[in-house]
Length: 70
Image 1 (cartoon, rainbow, N blue to C red):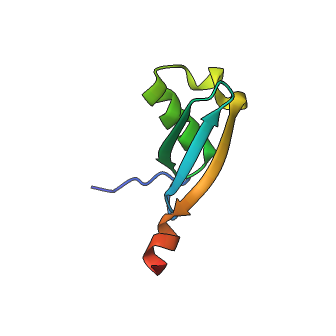
Image 2 (cartoon, rainbow, N blue to C red):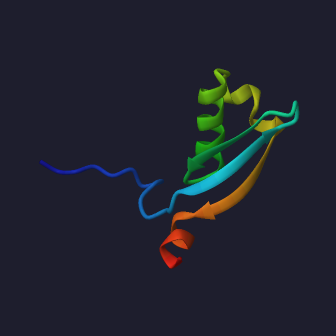
């Protein structure tokens, strides 16, 4: 059986993001890009990601590659 790997995620390291919403909420989540980070934050906050995407700031804290170098 052939294994299927999503092209968008293949080879990209996970990044730990700090996601800040303009209303003051903050959360740290893992994602390969900002889209994955905002969807993870929305899931944890229990809201649709489309309602928060433009109102969030994303700060890259550390990536998988940087952890390997430690």
